[in-house]
Length: 239
Image (tube, rainbow, N blue to C red):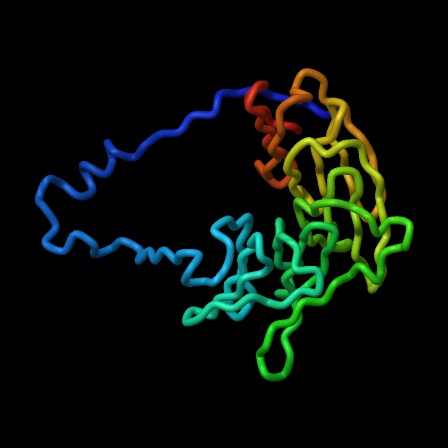
């Protein structure tokens, strides 16, 4: 079935009108009741760099943040930095269905392990990569799937599956990808979607959708459709 692309305006509706009827005009004697508690942690409190790129949590509820100084860990009471041999910026974090947290950094990627004492350690997967492919820059995204975990850089995708790393070469990455229906989709130049499934790669041209000078964002729209958003070209649904 040929792919179809639909263009539509992205509209955001603010629920001000409905909130008027829900809450009425009588002031609430407790103005913070019903609102979530928000706590802001400064860089001096978590002892890291002010810039963070990503955040996730494991099955225990422990929070991890990708920071310019490494991996921040927060158990609800205290912060610590998970040691890394490379000590690189952490750009991407993602948790798989079993609760394992995977990490993407600059020239490095791997995952987190917890020992019998509940202490978290980082394990790099660099030794698993073929020697000729060990030089790369940032890992911008990590995608756990049923057919492996994919670590995405600008021109290479590393697949961690059953204890081995395989390398998939791609054209220049042009933004953020997503997983839909178990398949990984990436925006790549020139003007096409790159699909990766079970380690195999295919390309789908989408002329007129990508602006080669602007980043593209892909997001799941439904079980079989992708939302494509570009700053210059607008918003589309890829079928």
